[in-house]
Structure formats: C-alpha cells, structure tokens
Image (cartoon, rainbow over all chains, first blue to last red; front, side):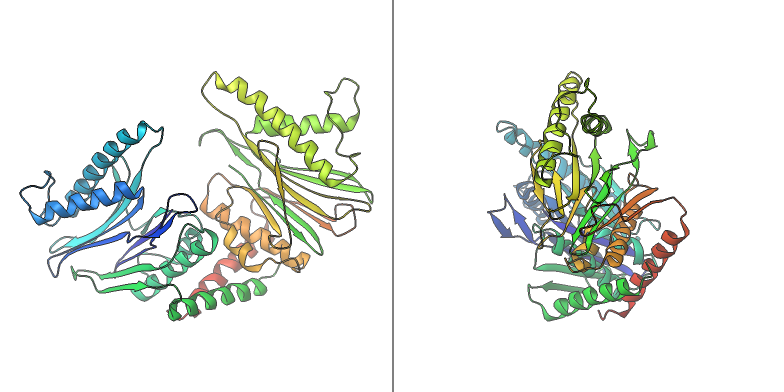
Length: 242
Length: 242
C-alpha cells in the first residue's frame, strides 16, 4: 500500500509520499513514489504514484524516455514540452492507461490484476498551478477551491485532519504540518505505509521546487512533531466535556 | 455502510452504532444495528451488526426465535441459556454463517454477493466480560488488553482517536467520549454512516444495561461535543511546531 497526498493552495503546492511497497506482508521494500520534473523558472511537475510497482515504474520510465528525446523511445509526448498542465495530465493518463492495460493482459493468465493511480501537480510559466488525480483508466479529476487536496492509496486514516484544517488560504508552513500529521496518523494505523517520506514544497508562480526533503525513519523533527501531536490530541480529548 | 465500535475496559463495556443503511446512494434508510438481550443481573448481551441488511436481520430474527422457545422455531441454541459467552459467540457465528450462505446462494444467480459481520459483547453472572468480532464465515476474534476495542464497517476514519486514547484503564466517561468522537470523525468523512446513533454502556459485573441512549440528528450535546472537538483539534494543530 501507499499514502500520497497533495495540497493545492493559494500560496503553492505541498506534496508528501511514503516509500513502502510490499508484495504480501513478507516482502517489503523501499521505493521512491515521488518523481520531479523541473526546468527551473519555466516548468515544474511532480508525479506521485500508488499501486502496482510494475505499472508505476514503467509509466514513469516511458515519460522519462519521452522527455529525453531518445530516438528509440516509444512514441510518448514529452510532459516537459506539452503546452499546458491539462495536456500534461492527459499524457500521464494515456501512458498510465496503456501500461496498465499491457500489464493486466500479462497478469490475466494468473487470474491476477494490476492497477495504479497518480497525482500530477505542477505549473508552467504563464499558467496556473494545477493538481490532478489520474485514475487507472487514464481519466482524471482536479483539485479545486472546494476540495484543495488529493490523496491516493490508503487515504482514510489521514483524511479527518485534512478535512478540518486545510483550506485554500492555509499557509505553506501549516500545509507542511498538515500533510506530515496526516501521514503520521496513517503510518500509525497501517503497517503497509512506512518511512522514509518524500516531501516537496512548490511556491506559487515560482515554477521550481522550493523545498525537497527526504525524512528518514527516526528523523528527530518528525518524531517530535508526532509526539507533540499525540500529546495535544490527548489533552484536547481531556478538555472535551462528555 | 455502517460504523459500529465496542470498547472492553476494566470498568465495563461501551458500544456505539450508527443507523444508516443504503442500497446505492439513492436509497438510504434508518435501521437499528444494535440489539440487546438482557436478564438483568444474570446476563446481558449486545450484538452490533454491519453488512447486508437481509443477512443481519435474518440472523438476529433466528437468534430471537431461539430465545422465545417457539416450538416452530428453526433449531438454533438460545444465546440466553448458553453456559458461557464463548458459546454465545459460537452460536451467533454459526447462525450468521448459515444465513450468509443461504443468502449468497440466492444472490449467486444475479452474480452478486452478500456478507455481514457482528460484534458480540456481554457478560453472564459468574463469568467475565467478553467481546467478540464475528466474521461472515462464523469464525471470530476477541478483544484483549492489548487491543481493547473492536470495530466493524467503515472503521478507518475513527481508528486514530481510539489508537491514541483508549487503554483497558480508560474510564467509562472517557470511553463514551472516545466512541462518540470516533463516530463523529467517521460521519464527517463518510456519507454512508449517519445519525441517529445508539449508545450503550454496561458496567463491569452488573450483568445489565447501565445506560442506553439514542442520539438523534441535531442532539445538542453531541453537536456541542463535535464542535468542541473540531475547535480543540484546530487549536492543537496551531500549537504544534512545524
């Protein structure tokens, strides 16, 4: 399983992903699920992935090949030259759907299936910030003012905190805190979501990655925040009149 | 969908269920999902249900018929005369599994399936308090000191609060508050869980229902607690150093 979350705010975008993958409970590994594509000042795109690793890796690999312009690459449009973020979402959707269908065909022989979904967030010079959730079939939805966040993977445990504190006016510092606490609740409740974490903050109209951090297991800042949140929750609980 | 939760504490047991059932999003109804069986001072049993209404209603009806001793009843042992709570769990499990299999047979023609699960909690004079989660197949697990709560239905949104505040030493007043806040988080995040709620508190060794309450939509106490919790969470959030 996986948990990835993206916030689309007036001040910018904040994205967080875990890195745990598992095939059964006895085969656990660490894989990056956040991929950044950047031409600083011109264009920045972040892709977060959830689902079957063979689908997500192949999809990202094809997108990268198309960017590289390698003449041997399969014909996929480059997300770095697509004229709009909407077109970027379309390219990612088509590539994901094609890869998913190919893998599913192979797996049908074993009566198994494979699926994956992605969050695509970014901005190009002259355009607005956009954030999309791409479904396995390649169609997508977009974050809006009413619902300024998107989640993929194990999204339920970490949703109540986002529902309560995130609005389009949330500051980047608060947004950073919100996604980390949302992840903390998820990690506590679901073994298949795990450290380390990848965090990225992209300021509005910068068209470049502002902050990029890998948060390792045992990171003292994250541990302190997690402990403080537990304690604050318990105190808040004590303060409520039954 | 449904959310039911039971806490097994040294001080007693606290149980809470919602009442929303739906067949699709356009067919929503209110049905009780908590059933109490009591011979005050001798035996008290609470059954909470989740899943296909046709399975849970028929299961409860058969258990009730067996208690009534009606000579025309299908042969099911009575949970009110079973010598131990473990035997009660076994009876409920067998009845549920039999009903589920019958309904599933009928639905197979439409390529649909039906499933249900239950929480069975109770105590008989001379025995300890016991709480079981009965799976659709009739097997079950039991709440223990390490994990003093059981949930069925839409359990994820409301789990983080329980994970953080509930231990076997939690008081009945705090337990009441914890299950209501756990339900509040679930109702906020999932449309298919809804008011009114049924709450029951059973003190240790009383072998009778201590408190039984239906909490209607718009209940001022619940609304106040819900609002206070939202505010406390937002304040706790503000207090955390990022």
